[in-house]
Amino acid sequence: MAGRFDPLTRTAVRGGRTGVPAGRGRTAGAGAKDRRWTPDGPVDLGLTLGPLRRGPADPTFRTTPDGSVWKTSRTPAGPGTLRVAGHGPDVHAEAWGPGADWLLEQLPALLGAGDDPAVFVPRHRLVHASHRRRPGLRLTRTGLVLESLIPVILEQKVTSDEAYRSWRRLVRQYGEPAPGPPEAGLYVMPTARAWAMIPSWDWHKAGVDSKRSATIVRAARAAHRMEEAAAMALPEAVRRLEAVPGIGPWTSAETLQRSNGDPDAVTTGDLHLPGIVGYALAGDRDADDATMLELLAPYAGQRHRAARLILLAGHTPPRRTPRMPRSDIGRL
Image (cartoon, helix red, strand yellow):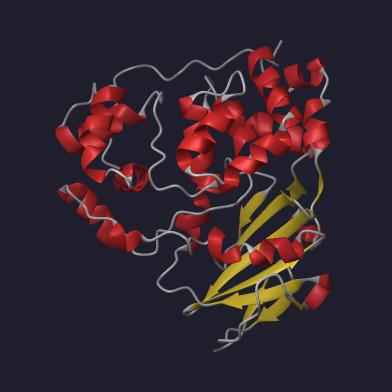
């Protein structure tokens, strides 16, 4: 396979069918370890890892023109940076930092090795078409709860742009530069202790109200208990997360879709999703949660995948109400 030049690492990257045992990355260039993995079917890196990105300027996530995906994580072994690229039927990953081995060991799960899209049976024409057009869609499983939980809490009751702005500011201020090529310009999210110690004025400057900041602090102080949910079945994981005041069904579902890769973790309590699902499947733009769940009932066990395919189809109702007003928090 012909080599390609990676603009961030400034090295040639070559394909091949070599394998590296889980957690035993070979030493690569610029202090990295690497691994090659052959999935059992097509994997679209953008579709699979896209839900982990928090806005176009997320300091923990980046894509490059060659199709590579860069992602940072605070793993149980420490901070790490992962770069993933597709090479024919293979996936090539490089990792830097104390968390490099952990990230390489988790690579198959991250790219949906535990997900089985073959069990999904489309029941609607639109869902069937969306499913057929996206054979590389896999549901990611990061194995890390706080990494998804904290940005989801930031998204409670505000616009996406406001939440992304808060995430960027707090990660850059209280996180740390990511291991690996400095030209990548990435950061690793703060430690649980750092989240718990952010003073009230910095939450305010970041546009985060006291209710959301208090929820994040409570979750951070129970970080070990939160992370245990990544290994739990969905009902137990939901109960574990929702035991924290301020975490409800919307927040737990949005988190567990990413940390646990659960194909049935359907989001309820969302401002737009019921109307989108209702309009796509039944022409009902005024559908509520109960109607959405009824429409998704034929996909029991796979409701999150069905909802994701509906969203990707782009068949949304015409807008007829004003956008959610922006908050003035942090703008006084």
